[in-house]
Amino acid sequence: MDLKTLREALTRICSLDHFLMDEKLRTLVGRFGALPSFPALYVEVMNELAAAEPSIVRIAEIVAQDPAMTAKMLHIVNSASFGLPRRISNPLEAVQYLGTGLVRSLVLSVHVFSSFDRKVEGFSIDEFEEHALRCARLARALMESQGADTVGAEDAYIAGMLHDIGKLMLATSLPDHYQEAAACAVAHQLPLYAAETEVFGATHAGVGAYLLGLWGLPAPIVEAVAFHHTPSRSDMRSFGPPVPMQRSLTMRAN
Image (cartoon, rainbow, N blue to C red; front, side, top):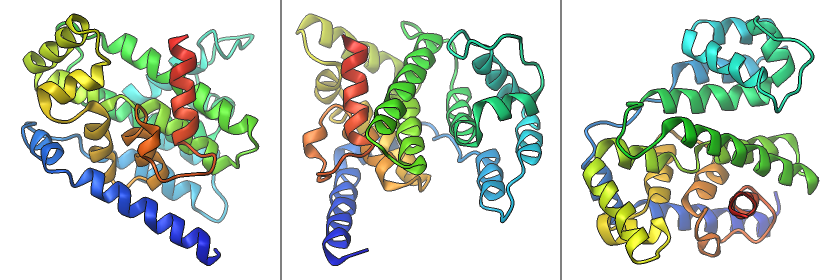
């Protein structure tokens, strides 16, 4: 890494740290009863992927330890978007079709989604997950279209899956205030994140990035989540996860 690249990377990390240390954001997160724990299954999958000779069979065995994870993986691989000629019912086959990068992303996102109550008034978890999956696919496709490497494309996919996790945290932990923010957005024709700032003093983007930062996820993922509504706040000047995240959200809106 040359000196200029190193300087830019350090500047971005310092800027992100400053964002996550905002007192209003820290105070808001402190009002939550508890934060989701880092998924042990994800660590196991990452350890296997880091092995000298990663085994797809072993990865399938790790995923199969969690029935909910297995069910979600099979649901996704059998969805219309994959267009497979026959139904897949075996975790090993699912891993082979999805690829290790996508399985890694799913292990992380499914754990997060399952950590929250699925019955929240005025908030559809199913619609939330569908939106997250669409954004993830678009973000990865945009990265790949620009010649990004596998790591960059998968980082964009994870960022897409988790970009709105702060909404889920707010809606389940502070439901009355979240409904107030949603009503404020409609009444005053504001973007939801602007209404959240009025009600909470921080946004779902900040809340989600705070959690992912605590988990120690790569800085490009945390940055993409933190600035997915305000990409100009990022010090990143090259094509990376924050850029396709914003574009995928725009394409989704259109």
